[in-house]
Length: 416
Image (tube, rainbow, N blue to C red; front, side, top):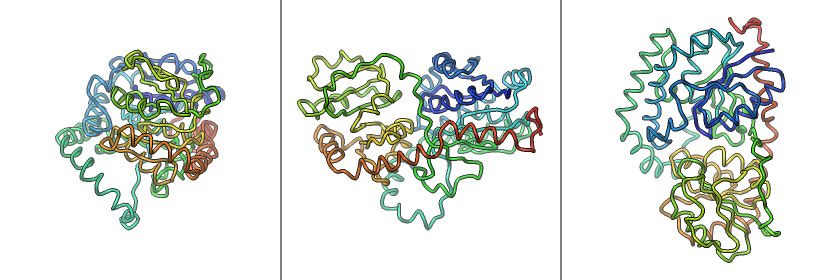
């Protein structure tokens, strides 16, 4: 029986896609010890892994530091600082556990470093798109779209946190030198590759898939249905088409946006189901129209199985969940990387995007009408969904892990 330690960061978008892989590995009699914060314990144990807490990383790791995709250099700084703080204990623990291999999220530099310092087979889990190196000529066609994004989003973001980026690079250089590892820059801090790197998307969805690192394996989306057994009623649909609205788990506190959605669909022929993620209580909206319901939480997979349209912030998990079930998207991105996801959805013809400044009840309604009546959006969402399913999912990912472990480069203990 193979044994692994899995190191992850406390973020739904990074934990959720890893759990079907964990469940499949456990089914194959691998023992997985999963390091994460307390709030994820139940889901990790439901997947069959052994839960193990970090000493200093808690559920509010990102929130307490004000970290998000809008401040990537600050994120890199905090991640590499945390790696320096916890590596000595993690190395001691890993040596004591004597695993055959290490699993780690691509944004988890301490997991990468544990594997490399101890010479263990390393499997990266990529919840975000894999880093690419597109040729300049191929990028020319994107200039009309990318220039506004460059000046409005990318350059201000880089200059705003430039000092943190420099500090992150300095700390990473010192830390890797201390442990005798090759140096990595700020981008490498948040994109740690393994001997194999499991990307939970398809080569069709990934832009410039032919330029990614040779370690990357596109395994498709790993649908996490661990919450599917919790009771939830769909009786209010009464045969109507379902519009689902969710802004994820981080940027979901804009009550004005939800009110615009209510205004856009009040009295319509569709049933609208909105989830606020707990930051806004459903009773904050007062008396709702008959065709609108607001919840703190819904079983997203079960909802999307029934949905005709998903209005989303564009997080990678939500985008993949939607396309997996052939549901077109109206994406209202809240952060830079969500804008990139939204642009890819639009480029593939599987949805539309509204920028923050464009959002009002009328534009939401008009976009929804297009997405629900123009059949090409549904057809393209289904086509992309086919690629996410056919890539193999958790079974393919587990096959890749076992293929790595059977590599003659490693002996039965997992060491060179």
